[in-house]
Figure 1 (cartoon, helix red, strand yellow):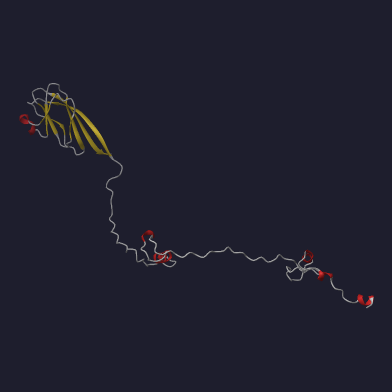
Figure 2: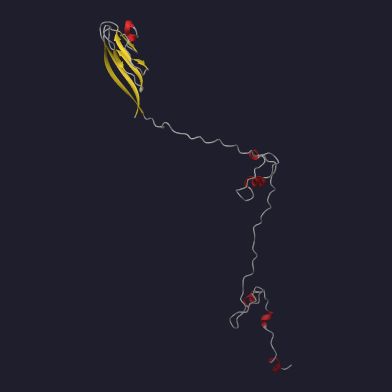
Length: 223
């Protein structure tokens, strides 16, 4: 073989002798990571892409078996698992299920509602007042004097005999004071006598001498 003959024979490319997985092979595009698509640039080499990476998924453990025969919330033993009881109570993925679990009682009939009317406010609209007065109880030879009249708003009457020597008598009617009738309030008493009455009262002295009487009427009236 002459030298001239060797000029016309194709030479073995040096690139084939390079290891495709070596750094030089990666640089020359000989790596197995090439996409295999010719470069759009004339004379260019195939593009190099990253190695494909597999998607990693988190391992999911198997679900535990449902526990039966639990007496939670008053459920009888053996009436089903928690999932089965939930399906019975709410129905399969719906809120319109009419299935009633066997361990639940039927709903009781509700009583018919009765209207209620407020006849009194919670606020107190009543005011209590006192009306003090002074009277002269005449002698027993005169007519009695009325110290208070009939009043439905009055709660009590307080009577004090101011005399230091003379007793007085009180009664509901004039006829009760005749012939020494009525109730006696002696002069030594130095405090008020309280009577819870809404009727009228009359007063009269026990002798011919008049006496002074203080009267306080207590009322509860609406505002």
